[in-house]
Amino acid sequence: MASLLAQMATDGPKPQAMMRSLSLAGTAAEEAEPEVHVFVRCSKPLTKADAEALAVAGGAGTVRTALVPVSKVAKLAAHESISRVSAPRELKPLMDIARPTMQVPPFRQKTGLSGNGVIIGLVDSGVDVTHAAFGQRILKLWDQNIPGKGPGAGFPKLGAVLTGAAMAASKDTVGHGTHVAGIATGAVPPYDGIAPKADLIVVKTNFLNTGIAEGIRWIFSEAAARNRPAVINLSLGGHGDAHDGSDDLSTVIDQECGPGRLVVSAAGNEGTDRIHASLALAVGTVGSFPFQVASNSSGAGPGYVMLNGWYEGTGTCDVRLTSSTGVSTPWQPVLNTNPTAKNYKLVQDRASIATPPASVNPNGDHQFLITVQSLQSGGTVQGGNWLLEVRPASGAPGTAHVWLLLPPGARPQAAAFTGPAQSESYLIGSPGASSETVTVASYTTRNQWTDSSGAVRTVGLVLNSISDFSSPGPRRDGALKPDVAAPGAMIISCLSAASKPPASNIVAPGYRVDAGTSMATPMITGMLALLLEQNKNLTPAQAKAWLQQRAAIPGQAAGKHDAKWGYGLLRI
Image 1: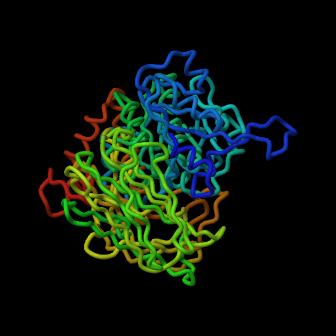
Image 2: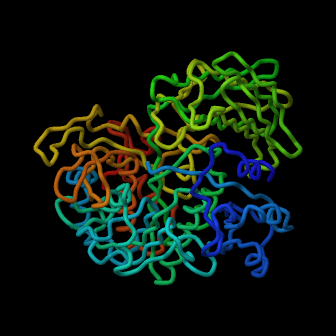
Image 3: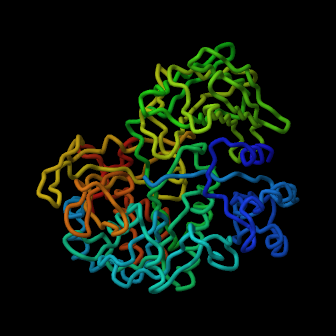
């Protein structure tokens, strides 16, 4: 609780999108009180009266959200039915050849399936509702970024829900959501999607995990009101969680999934990024996690660096950080009293180290979270060689895993682990770490294309193989992820008229090429829409079993799982 309030009070990296004015019209901006959208874990069911008084959104699960003024967060956390309040985290948005690769055309011809009667939910950067590929099949759009009263009873008063012609006011300036939607359900050949007759319900999200969670709940509630099955596409993710499916967003997904309610998530695009390190911790030794930060003069220096560390709750550890200037923080133990974070000055930089007790985490494990930023406003973290050290203090803490988090848009070379602790595994975070979601890796079906000017473009991806950028599993708890692979590079799909991609990516009027597990995910979303047309009560377990039976790693027998491939490329 104190850590949340400290985050709100300092000028450190935090999701600015969670702030919105509570002032009345005409009130000066400095008089407005910021509002924060937090996750709430309930130790027992909330009464309707308590939920309304605390501004807790609806739902029957143990994990819910609340949109409250900062001054009321402490009151929320102190309520007898609330066991935990968590600050939001920002996630990021991660077929002419692809469909035949999965053998979709003959499957659709044989079965007559097209997604008719099924709802595809999209939680993304929005959608170009005017694109011909979608016709009149977009039923509703919740834009979480514009002023409004939200979806209504049981949901936060966040953004506005639009229908009909009013949806055109919501623009997809990023273009990511439009491209993804076209892969799943575009209806204009030759770049039509997998399920061209499915309807769409869209959430233009603020990319905070709290907003994403409410978007999932809203789409499923809209589908239920129509007595229709739905599959939700989540081509987004991050690494601020425990990577074991215990985080709040993953828990919401697990709560919401069920018969006729499916979620598909991207594995991630960090397969070649050195953002993870792990070491087995032994009493009497010190685990070293060296990492390098880009020089201030390189142009790649990050505005901040965060280290998200986890180890088993059967032991405790002290942590210490040494900057590239050679200055170290003291060894910081687990802090069992508030505040659970301390700040240290490291010459040009400031480090905040949070070491809360394991009891605050749903998985019972220990987390340490270190945030480094320049003391100069708008400056970058001091470049050079840094060192994180983890020293076992008691018990058996097992293996320590640490992930590097950088500002949105930062280059991969802005910071990277070095040395023997650096690991290329365990790179699937939330929501791909959810137990119920289908997590999708990317396969490369194209590495060359001709743009609209007639120029031939190429990328350095190996054709007909798993994409090197595709994030590998498993989860930190050993659970197998990803689930399956699908074409994700380079995929031609819809271009949002409000976006401005590089000219080299535009292949025809209204269409562009792109790559990522973001593109592979709607391939599987569209496939599950076809299956839901056939069986509206299809469960997540049945969907995964169907995919697994029809997937294989090329050259290997079906049923073998690989950390990069999952159970292999889907061929139906």
